[in-house]
Amino acid sequence: MKTETTVTSVSPKEMSETANSPRIQTYSKSQLATLYLPHIQSASARRTLRSWIAQNTALQAALAQTGYSEKAILLTPAQVGLFFKFLGEP
Image: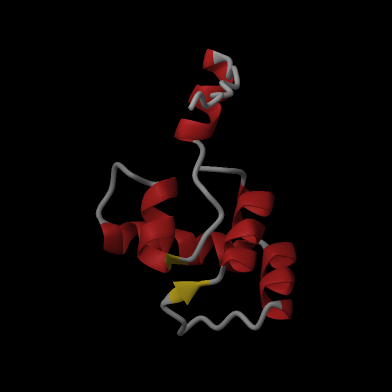
């Protein structure tokens, strides 16, 4: 019995964009902060992320609509998407 295999072609540019691009998924605040600031300690990265939130009132308002809490450890995919939208992808 013969089976057909379909091969889809993906350009090297598309492969590198998807391979290097972070996925919108659940992240802890530490994980997200480390994506944005990989060269510093996790605690410092979290403080910097908190500072960015405090300075960006549009991001604060959008996060509030998702039920965001400063005390939350995990960020939902919707909240992560907002970070990517307002701060750019890491």
